[in-house]
Amino acid sequence: MIFDFTDFYRYLLMYGLCYFLADMLRPLLHAERYVSGFGLQIGEIHTVIYNNHPYRAFPVLLMDSVPWYLQIYIHTLTVTSKNRENKPSYIHYQPAKDRHRPHFVEMLIQLPPHSMTEIRVQFERALLKWTEYTPDPNHGFYVGSSVVSALVPSMVAMNPNFTLDQPLFSSFVPVKEESSYFVRVYTEPLLVNLPTPDFSMPYNVICLTCTVVAVGYGSFYNLLTRTFQLDEPSPPLAKRLANLIRRLRGVPQLA
Image (cartoon, rainbow, N blue to C red; front, side, top):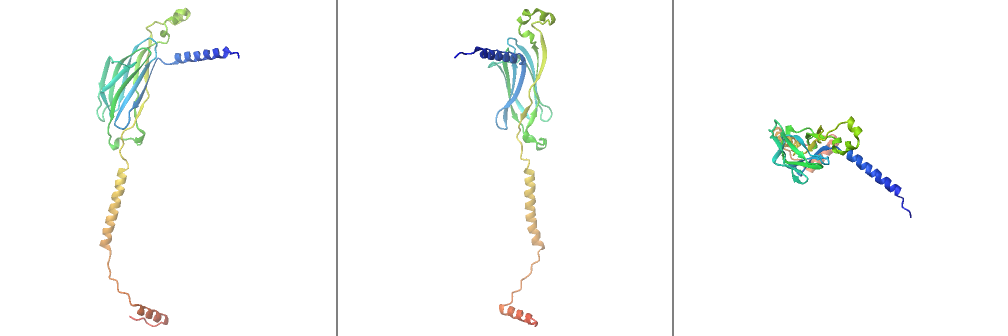
């Protein structure tokens, strides 16, 4: 059996080409966010920022606004990159005021090259008044997106040898190593469930109260308005038979 290497080489070529295109089309900076935890009391917000540049590190500015009904524990804020603590060079936190303003967090983080940086913070769900819930409270409450702003190194500046091998391209597009462009990335909005009261309880209370009042008042009104009469004793059987015979004969009945 003779093995045909043509298909094998064609497969390797297509696989390498797809991997190269996927690597080229992958953005240098992107972010995502999600909520973890169980129950309806304590949760945790995770914000993940990816730096896909192979050798360049650059700072990013993260801005996040969290509603007041998610009470953030700022002392639980942790930033990790490559399983190591990545202390932000600047942090600004403005606590929320109940029913007036949300939490505001702003921090400057240095992203290592080809890394994933995760920002975690715990929160506690607050109890709302029953009039503050939306018409579909069981669907959850939406939390706005985080905003990540940065000066990202340009795509051409990723490989400094690229322009050395192609002088014609470098003559038309002069690019320096330190060239960069501004990028602003928005994460996904969050959907957080809050503890909801039993909205059917007022209806149940009204129905139960009306039933009790109706039964109690109906019985009381019946006792006050009913007229009582004494029942006369029924005549004996012989007298009833005699009256029946007299009625058939047309004779006046016995008193």
